[in-house]
Length: 177
Image 1 (tube, rainbow, N blue to C red):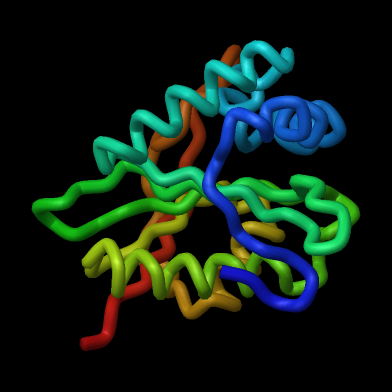
Image 2 (cartoon, rainbow, N blue to C red):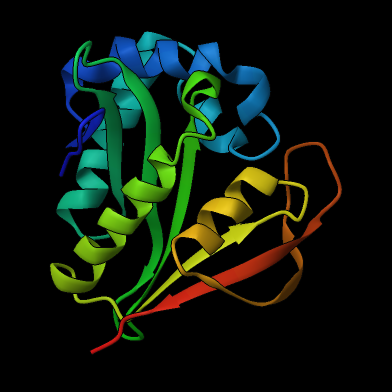
């Protein structure tokens, strides 16, 4: 999957140092919304372990993690995760993050649109979800730009480390057959 400025690739062990750098370059941005993924990439060795674990999850169809890379530099600038997959119900949830320098350019919306098509056609999912805090305007913008519809507020859905639980907003996209 690619377009003129980026391509989507699977995680490889050779990505560990770039993944670690990407996470550390954006640590302040990712702490509120992706603390667990961030915590697993605080050192290059930790990123190697994270990649190995994510590869196993993908192999067993539990979770799919992809990188967005710049076509000219191959630098990692975003991460997309399809998680919490319920194969019986055909539902999966997206989580994603992007470098500040690439934000507000439509890149994540383009990638989520492509990955949604992949999830519907190749994986056979019927419903995709994005769960975001109401203050994460950029994430909500991606959801609505990609055709996801607000469904409801999920009470006490998210428990960030060392903070009270938070209500989250649920957006869904249905596969049209």
